[in-house]
Length: 261
Length: 267
Image (spheres, rainbow over the protein chains, first blue to last red):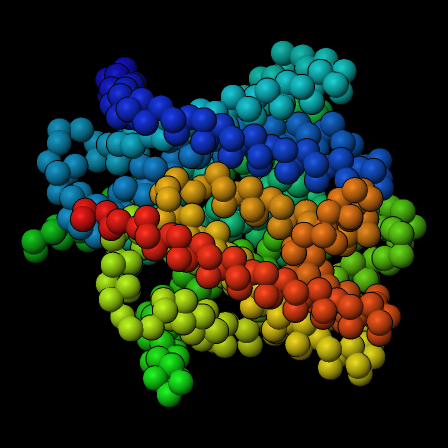
């Protein structure tokens, strides 16, 4: 409960500092709408030549784009900003201040910064998702919706753990500001179902850089493709990675020498 | 002239040292450069196979050839001045650059060419490997190969001038994200990065011929894929030459105007 209160407090600070730059809202909205437009234009060109792409029809691919935007928004809202600041704070020694606070340091670095405007992507993603599902005429039952939420939470945890592991590397290698962009450039591939890709790329996007769990798997749940093995696997991977990233973080923290040391 | 050559050589040494220091970033950047065309290659191959092995006059293996050549043309013509400029102006570094006795574009060109010299060999290896994986065969005419290199050079020069001009927008406002993104979207659809232009709706093809984008990416690729007659190829070089002049004049005009409104951050 205390953690939730802290998260809200940090989020509120973020809101207050951002509303001073209200015009950014329109810039971000413009950019988000453009990337949505690109995705829709791309789909309409491709589906003017075919009815299905690896067994997915146009509306199902659109639903996947919705998940892609939604998860991208979550990453931009809460996961990426905190990790970026954490990497910077290892380099300039500001992590000292975080460590002196009487709360768990991993929690603090994870929630210390939010990017308010990513809420636009989340809203757009949900809008696209709902539009696609309505046009599919699919009746998403409580079961499917439950599965979707479950794999979305699992996917989010996997991505969070992955970012934490990458960021924790900065305890050993100080100059890795760019490492998080690995994810960003590969995340683009999540706009399409990973089942389209040849084996090596599919495994890479599932187990090395876990893009598949973030986008394809939740979209599978909504379009009635998810089998129970994938559901169980996603949950197990999520739990294991949460534990592993936590352990890795504690090992890394022991190496941290502070700014002036 | 001698001073300029020396500048280019010095810049090459500096860039080389930076690249060695930031090997990992270089690798990450290359993954992105390869992945985007690769994803489109895979998607279009699947669509083509669904259609019985071809769309329009592109067979599945020609799609592969197209996107692998795209990877290489993009590698040669790519610039990062738009990101760089925003950073320079925001941090105020640009004031120091202005104190130097040569135009700052020279340092950028030298930096771009030197880092390309270092990264291009690995890109060629990646392209050849992908060519083998996707069974690509290319048999361009000798004249097409001969014209390809000037076409590629002109594409590089025009793209550099255009993007340097756009980057100067930072003189007027540091909020250039939206403008840059608009440019990238136009580039994506009108240059042929998303799909061969012949597959896009007719109005877009007309637009692509009028605007400079197609001449930066799609034209050199079409040349090597044997999709142009000799006459079409020569006309293409002429259009490129015209765009080179236009973009150069634009660069000069915007530079003169921009430098007047520039005031360093913190000044």
